[in-house]
Length: 458
Image (cartoon, rainbow, N blue to C red; front, side, top):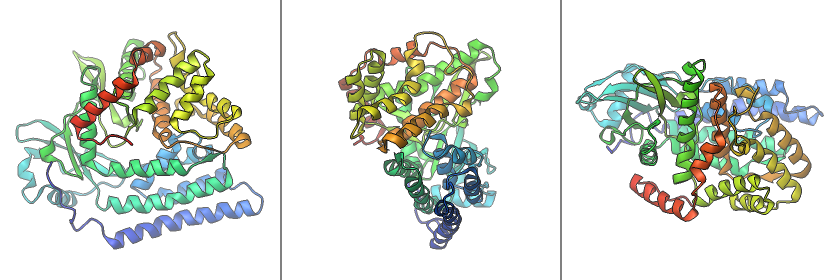
C-alpha cells in the first residue's frame, strides 16, 4: 500500500482535540450531574427523561461518539432500555467534506499527483458515515471503485469520545450493577480504534475474500492496494440494491437472501473464527444475476472481530450442551469463554439468553426467527429477564468477546425478521459445524491470517 502522510495540516491538531474534550465533557458532565442529583434525592437516575437528556447532549456531536453511542444501543442490556431507545434515534452521519477539502485530504494520502492515478474521481461523496465518506471513482483502466476517505483528526476525536464515554459506564456501574461493564468498555475501545486503520480493514477484506471464496451467494470487494493508505481505502465497487427493497418480495427471494446472510456470518465464524461485527443494514447490498436477486455484497470490514479458536469451540459446546441437555458441557462452554465464579443460579440465568440466541438453531423445522416479534424488539424481553435475575444473583462480568458476538447475532436475527425468512436454521447451522474440529479450525485460521497479513489472536 501507499504510505500516507501522518503530518497533513488537518490531523492531530491540539486545539481540535482540546475542543472535542471540552464539548463532549461538558455535555456528558451535565447529564451526569442531573442523573446523580436525581439519585441523591431518591428518584430514578435512569429514567426516560434523563435518557432523552443524554441523547440531546450527544445529538450535536458527529463522528465517533455517535458510532459508539449507537453501538451501545444495539447490545442488549448493556444500557437501560430507555437509553437504548433514545440513542437509536440519533444519526451517525457527519456533514460531508466539500470538494476543496477532499482534494487536500487526497493529496495528503496519495501525493500532489493523486488525480492522475485515477481515471475519474467524483469529489461529491456517494455516502457519508461516522468516520469517513465514500467517493465513486474509476481506475485508469476503467474499473469501478468505492474510495473510503477518513475525516480529519479522527484519532483525536475517537480518544476524546472514548474517554468521556467511560463516564456513562461508571454511572451505570454505580446505579445498576447487574453487569460489570469494565471488560465491555475495553472491547469497544479496541474495536473502534481498529476501525481507524484502513490498512487493517484492507487485510480484513482479504481475509473474508479467502474465507468466502467457496460461497457464491456472498461477494467480497477486491482491494486496490496501490490506491489505499492508512486513511484511504479503495475497493471494487459492487453494484447492488438495498436489502430493505426486498422485504415485500416473494418468499423464495427473501429466503434466498436470508441464506446468503446466514452464510456470510456463520461460515467465516466456523471456518476462520472471525465475525463481521456491524449488523447495520447499510453494510449489505443485494446483487442480481439474470435479472433475479442472487446474493449479498458484504461491503464494510472496519468492525471485524477475530477470535481465538477456543471461543468458537465454546459456541459449539454450548450448542451441543443445550441440544442434549448436557449441563457439564454447558458449564464447560461458559468457563471456556472466561465466565468466573459461576453458581448454579448464574448458569440458569445465562441459559435464558443462550436459549434465546440458539433457539432457531436448535429447532429442526422451517420457521421464522421469532414469530410476531418486531425487529427493534428482538431480544429485549429476554435481556430484561436476564437483567432482572442478575440484579438478584449477580453481578456478573461479561467477557469482552461477547460484545460483538451478541451484537452481530442479534443484528443478524433482525435482518431475518425484516426479510420474514422461513428457513430451517437448524439444518443450515449443522452444515457449518457438523465436522467441527478445534485443531482443524486452528490450522485453517493460521493459514488464512498469514495469507491476509493479520496477527493471530491472543
